[in-house]
Image (cartoon, rainbow, N blue to C red; front, side, top):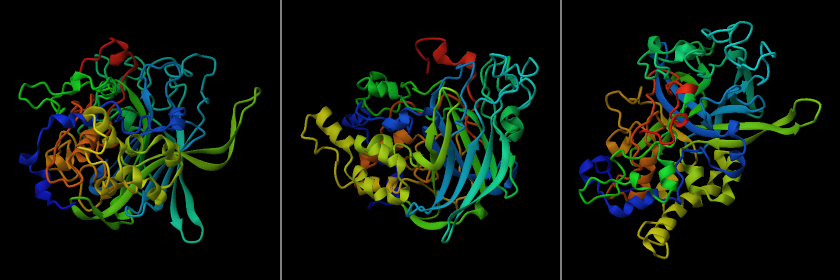
Length: 502
């Protein structure tokens, strides 16, 4: 891309064009990866929704710089879905992969292998939480009142010449934070009004049920797993209702269509996800030189997440299912939006089974984005070839492929929402430390991606386009695991009224 950094971020160059509202038309899906392919849609516990990767400091030692990687699965998790509530699948392997950012070749893996979803202290009650061998509020993970407690084994693997990956079990039966059942059952998550309290500025302010699940292992890696508030935000319902007027500016200045005035509704408001994460000391990483579009030369790593299931599952009427055989990858995610927005239906399930090392086969979807063709044909009544560029989009291929988050590990800790220097629009807003440099909590990936499609391939003018949802509905925490405190079952908005107040 033949533009300078100054050209890319100078706000005076940001134009507001009516026709670019088309970029949020109903033919597009902007839900990170909540609904990316037909087969994984049928397997929600293995369905990756978001991957975040950014440089920060160790949760209890600001002198240690770390790579934070946070992964969420199980889209649209209803906080009040008792009595079982959401659990990680006990026959799936959840993996964080560290790669060469240029080739996508995996160099290191971190595996979370979760315990049985049926093992309880007291099988003679209907309650999963609040009645184990005692009745009452849960104050400590795994206490007598927590009937069901999920744990996980944590392993690490490194590429070894001639033998593939050498896997080492680092810890057994690590605790998983419980769901936020509500004020009477899991009070540590909630305020006196029964709503989840989030936005902890430091470790001391973090709730105890989250804090208790944070563990530092012998190799210095920090791990955590449990439910979180869904940190992705976008007006997907408005997008799919033929461009509902609420996602279009109506400020009377003649530039309706930008989608930046905040009148949209977060379609993920009130929902939770299941999340797991690591903090890896920067000094423990093998880093690589690479080039990031617009900014230029960087040094760091690539990151993507994957979920695998055993090749064989046997079901009988006499016993619970039994699984065996080698692990088979069924879902993966690096950058937000790639599979869901760019890859055509014929390639979506294949993508989920493929490693980033072989992503060249999907390059045509980035270089010749159907999204631009559909906008041209449907909204402008053309043959689809213009006005938006539908071919030669090497700019999009450079951002998305291989499909790993490329993280510059030399930057030091990056600013997060609520901190000085953070801008949700990342590079477009003059903040070079967000997506596509990794991905932070709070990065408005929908608006960033829309603006890239609108402005490329030349980027001589940067046009900011959005969906009118400028922030998440829950405050993020500013300490690991960063994602917001999960919503409480009795307090979620979508259970109280047919219309969600924004």
